[in-house]
Length: 425
Image 1 (cartoon, one colour):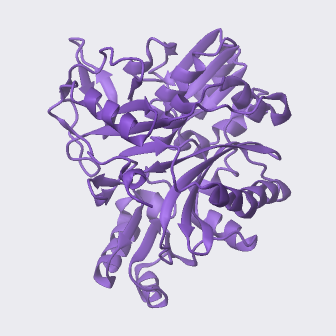
Image 2 (cartoon, rainbow, N blue to C red):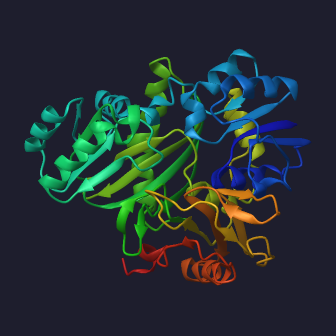
Image 3 (cartoon, rainbow, N blue to C red):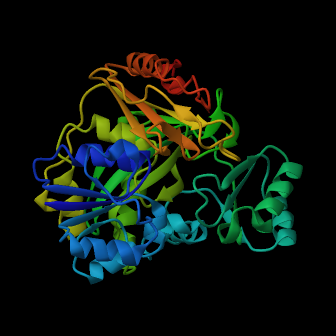
């Protein structure tokens, strides 16, 4: 098979790493790719993930048997629609189906329409109305930009003054058009986790759970980020919670999307809150989470390509069920100092390409090669250090041992990834 993988981050590096292991693959092209993926396939740095026309032309040119879309930005641009029109199987939802992520107002209305459990909410377009609506809710206040904001468009404000300031920032243009509307939600108390589902439009298979760490600093402090670390499996996903989430959330979501004429093909990330009333939807993502994808790919013990292809072709009955290793994988994100607001770019990283042993993988998320061949930071989240272990404690120890061998004064990381799994439950 010839496979085109779209994207350039840690999620895509992990997908490329797993796809390249498949005996079905003859040629792997990654657009635009990053330096860490160069040994796995052909890079096309001249093409951006949002260049739907250029990527479709490349897929035609290379006679792609499958296109795997990593980032949500490509889905928002309608890449899957173009590829479907060209008769090229695409793992990733259409622009309309991707609204489950690209518009929080759309997803909340969908959930409400079909009685799928989630927090109460309202959608607001002007500052005065949004501020007045705070009367409906109580602290802490949950305020979300309606559109895509690179994982940073959610604020949990401890008091009304902070909530009003967040409303002013979002509706005032902090996230551009993504913040032209805000969604204000009831605060849900509980533990959060991410459940992954692979769907062919009508059928689906559960693809494991993980727990992300959104805050920038230890102790879940600091601003929200795109994710500072993850681990899988997550203890929050008990058998009972997984069953309830499947019956109350996943089944009706896939079924109702198809009934409404927007069948969902690809991976659906279901962000769930385990509340005293059972699982409730926090948000949907229309792609693998980042860094959750990294831990899922390292846990997966079977070939991922037949699953991706079956979803893209609309027939999951043609693929074997995924098989996961026992044990735990943990991922620690190394970010550039100043992230998420103003990450420092260009600092040199040494030691990221050494052999860390069979249990550790380093995925590149935001790197570039300088003219002198040195590896340098080129984004907010820069490296993902992932480690496998028999349990969370062992996986975590291996990850942090590897981090200690990387020389990067320009970066920082959390030191408590996986802390919830190590606390008595």
